[in-house]
Length: 498
Ligand code: PEP
Ligand code: MN
Image (tube, protein in one colour):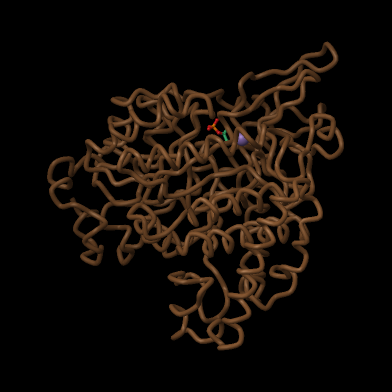
């Protein structure tokens, strides 16, 4: 087909030519709208009839607005994820469960960027590995909900479905189509500030706001042994950074490979910035479709695809929308972006293989990231079968662990929380199961924030259920706070240290 003959530039590891011949024309039946013929498996947003003209004009406008991300950036991420899939890099993905338009504000954006950068530095150091950072940010607005309604004080209201559908306020629960346009502009403003920060040295290792490790006094750490442990890691990290600064390795691109803290991380460039990608769950298909754009024929992505999603670099399919026959899978199979798929205990190994055949017909390395989220009690039962099923195929996926979503519990007071020890147990078990099945865990996926929230119990600050009431601000799932996020990064670093 014309779309496949466009670019000769694809590196050989990214595509297997035999698979093209075998499944070659599978995308000829795909278009950005072909999902409309399929069943939408999660609660469709029903706008009121009177809103039809607004919806039409909003979608028309979204269709004309410029891409939020470029195909060049998407290609760069595809290449990095190919390295992740081959064990040459580690993936760190994290951010809010439900991003709220109000989070589009200077300090919140800075604190999220900061926690992800600090976590990545600790993991780079501990794992001696390059890292790829993908934020759940600048567009993570749409939320799948277990129930279309919720009861508050005996009254029933439509559930909050994310800021691009309806509002959290009880008087704003009717879906409002103009929120789709608000979503675009909040994504754009968030991304604009992230780009500005990174472009002006926020990730520079000399930048005091992002990298003042003095602030890591670990005052919050309750257990003295853990405190000592962390301090030891930070001392060594600081030593490495000092050494680099003294010899100028942090300023000299030619010495990047001798840089002890950032060894192998080509993404810490001589201009002292880092690659930082964004992602969201691809749930609201009308929104995703209007932001799906055709690829220029010069793009290496055009070798296999005609279109990419220009609203974000990376899009994932939720556990509730990954049905083989459904509209979401239909949409996802055609876009050139790297895509994630949440997998849980309800996924049968043979179904996983079928799904990969649909989503990755060309066997492109790292095209699909499998984000496993079983829960700490189930991971041992289900992960080995999934690993073996994928090993029996030609698909080369990124294996990523989301130790959050299978570990959500409700306290006796009715508060949705997660236990830090369950999160760590699922994560560490996942590392081990991959290793003992001749596989490798390539990345991690967390719900986190840079702020001092109290939503997850445990961690080195030993938050209790009583603490939850103090600063619980999530509008959806409980996140790791700043300290708990760093706890996780230290634990990953320690895992690699052995
Ligand atoms: C999420 O990532 O916020 C989410 C809803 O996850 P899952 O689809 O795995 O339940
Ligand atoms: Mn969530």
